[in-house]
Length: 520
Ligand code: ADP
Image 1 (cartoon, rainbow, N blue to C red):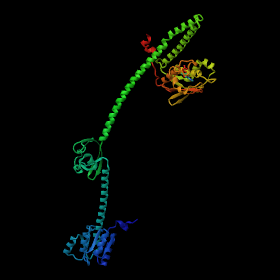
Image 2 (image 1 turned 90 degrees about the horizontal axis):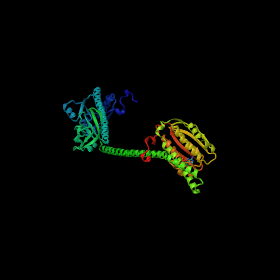
Image 3 (image 1 turned 180 degrees about the vertical axis):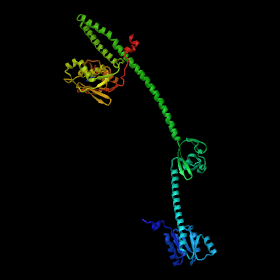
Image 4 (image 1 turned 90 degrees about the vertical axis):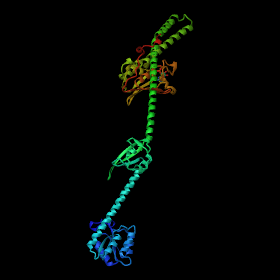
């Protein structure tokens, strides 16, 4: 590192050219300038000085007027004629003080005269002024370069912007635009400078092209502090395409809304129709099962009386026909009873769901099925079972159908039935597993359909039990399904929500009144 006493660093030193034909003079001049701590270069003739000027720029040239071959004035003329040294300050060193001499010198661009004998202090102080001047000039050049570089960068940025960039002065007049502005608005740059910005953007949302055509714009404003005051940059974007796309989206949305509304309407109408026809069906099922019971009982009663009174009094065929009638009537009675049960699932008069302990429900079911359990030596086991929100009567119906079927469709001896439950999120998953005859995979989906029976007359039943189970489970918002392997057993799964929101309830036919057509 250079200490302050060592003077300026070599790069910061100014160069001074001393031109004199006398080596003695050169030595004493050099010695006088030594205190300035600049680079002093010496030349002994005009030619040598010119050669030095080809290589370097000098802060000042000290030029002896009287020299052989080429005197100081001739040398100065040549120095001035060259571009590089046109403005380099020249100080003439002379012994004469006549006016002609001085004029000639000043004419040739001398900045000063120093008269011999040279006083070192005066020489130093004059030269130091030029050193200072040259240093300031270099600084200025450097700063101008930085500034023009920054300006070039700024303009390049302005041009690279995708938007029309308009810079406006404090009076609202356009100071600068980029070429996108010319393209977007159809003006030449010169037509815009100094014009009020409103000729391009009458307001924040509209742009106006030369000729008056308007188009939608989006403008972002940002201030720039400059020496001339605050300028405002307007970044203007043509949003015609975007607005068009937005309009199209709005149109499509409206169309979509209209369609959704129409479809919703259609759906709610068909839902209503479905609800009504379901209700009708329920009422029909209730009426059919309820009102048909009495005439059916008559048929059964009289057939039985007929059988008791006339057995062996009619021929054998008649006896057989009568027993067919009795069996048919009994089966029909069973069917009507189950149909009635089916139509009553989820009736309003059941009241709201309440906590039901399913373990207690299973106990009750086993009591109800006691005879079948004992007769078939069925082994029924249970995991820990939860309390759910439901209606006890419905859960008894549900478990009784499932456990009853597991015993009815047994194959192994003894039939083994296992009941379990596990919680998954907000649902209980129940499973009733048996080791019975199983269900063919093609039919597992069908067993929940009303009157659907897979095993025909070999087993008693009406084909309604599982439909009732499905209705009960779905009434609480749950699902029911079966997984089975033929010959190995089946597992019936169903879910019940941990908390029932509100079960789907329908009025019974008794409450709504039986349709007139069924009463007639
Ligand atoms: P039902 O037992 O009165 O015939 P369900 O609706 O209870 O009527 O059952 C429908 C059909 O599903 C039955 O006929 C039977 O073929 C089949 N099924 C039901 N449970 C089982 C079971 N645990 N194992 C095998 N098949 C079964």
